Length: 383
Image (cartoon, rainbow, N blue to C red; front, side, top):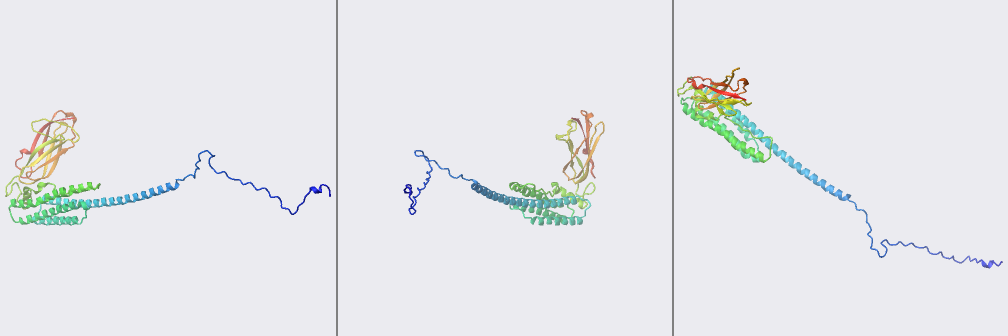
């Protein structure tokens, strides 16, 4: 054993020396150093997507509800407007048909070739037509606000039917009599119902119905007038007397068994648009305008209705006279009808000169006094 053997000490059974413990790392708590105020730790970034989705969903739901409400209201408005439109159109058709019956009546009583029987038969046909209009009117279903106007419309039609029935009865009652005065009175009393029907139709149906449509904001449709008698003078006693006399052969020739004369005359001559009335002995200046026209009023001064009266106006300009003729279909006794003359091809070369204007009313059958059928006036034309 060497001296170094003592230096080596083997101890196989001794425990090894424990290793020094590992150093544990301790995290320093976050926060500011001592003495400093604490820092606010920022949290996670908030998101707005869910909120926006909620708002969008609510807005969409509101929009759907509004669209539904507007659609319902639109359908209701459309349905209401359609109901008003259909009713008014149906009423207008009935009114037009009834107006046509009135024209047939006027033409019928103006026919000089009728017999009592043919007149009565035709009147019965007109009554049947009017009854049909009444039935069709009663079948209409007006919107609530138009019910009152609807009732008045039916009343107007019933007045027409009553007037026609009354006239038929009057003709039948006087068929074998010779008292034209009584016949004229009876017929006139019934014909006035026809005039009244026109007033009822306009005042109690048309005007109130238009007011309702305006209040309900319904556009594109309007109730129309229905005129049964275009000339209210048709219902006068004198007019009815003439009809009866002609029907019974009393008013033929120049006189009648009831007495009377035939005759027409010039009532006035006016120039429009100024409205100046021409007077013999005066020389007015007439300005040439596009709507220049001469109006001639013709008075039936006799005791009978006259038909097909020709009225002639002549402007004697130096280059070539202008001649125009118009015809008045009929004039009741005591009535005045006007005719107008338009579209003159005047020669500017004579403007400023005095020109004669002549008016002539052709005499009717049986007319003996003709002096007042012709008149001549002097005028000047200017630009």
